[in-house]
Length: 311
Image (cartoon, rainbow, N blue to C red; front, side):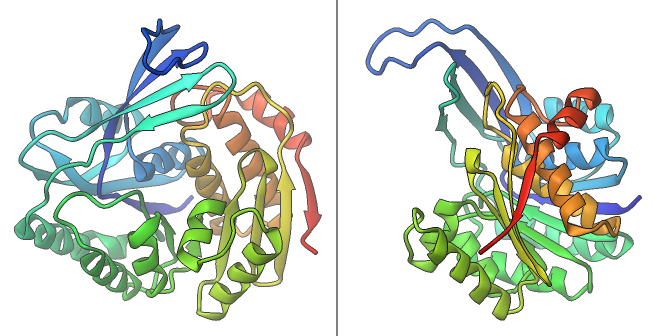
């Protein structure tokens, strides 16, 4: 299996609170809650580890509350290459209703000084070349500019390794200029950076094709319950997952990217890769937390995925 480095510049402690229905401006009684060390790159890392890959995790981590993250690294066998930053890693609150709707209250993240940014670049120079693929995922913390982020991606590109990017807004806009190997926006994220309507599939398809013309090899477009579209070299596919009972949508897109990367690095055909990735994403919404925990359920979900060519 592959050696993969994931970068999470703005990790978080995710507190997911389960509710029947959120009543704004009223006292709500929760059905339960769970806390996870999280962040998009870390969520992706856990799925990759479950698929058998050796994963190194890096980014910025607060010195005041690293315990949950370090326990996760140890439990999952992840190699810790995080740069420590003074302060607390942020807490994100996820309000997950029974019907599947999730309301996110995301903190701004640590303030990362120039010396810690330089330390991360130096760390990556030492370790990146020992891997087979790179993943950069999530938002930017305070103090990290889109310009610095674009420079980071260019430095990573110089290693000649496949680089997957999953971010949004100004970070995605900056990242597109570096032409990563793979991007995984959702409909809203792609529409925002391309200035088009998220409700127009033909426009989204056209935008993905234009991005490929700019040197991005794979555009993986997550579409929630509608499934996923994948446009790549001789690839124009769409997949729809089977219907499942939604517990939380948190981590579904991360699971999709991880399983797609798995198939690509293993040299699988596109349809086999997309079937697994769609099933892994569908399984993710049936659970709280990240990773592949029920292989029998995953097999059933794979069988229920439908794949067709994009028109």
